Image (cartoon, helix red, strand yellow):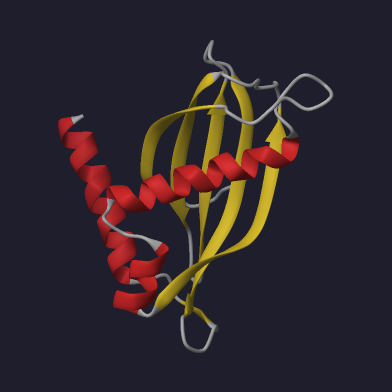
Length: 148
């Protein structure tokens, strides 16, 4: 993986694959982004954030700029999987959210690297990543490192 900058947040999430298998007997490639979005929402909720709160309280919106998914192993319906989320920040106005999917046996199944930025909710123009966002993630990572 290319240099994405400093990892300012990392957490493991788990979920159950509920989507039906495709004709090849595994999760359709297009469905991985739905699970990444589920994890993004759960990540925001862990900070008491939401897309609505960003808009209403801070006047900003998160926007996906680009997504690249590398597939290695299939996942199947009813698999209980771990998804590791890492947030990297290198320079404004963007950051990366990297979702690594693991099979039930712990092997890497796929990596979804998503370029994300913020826009002003009124003008829809790109802005720098809000300082509160970076600070909260770094503070949470520090607490995780100190106390496990």
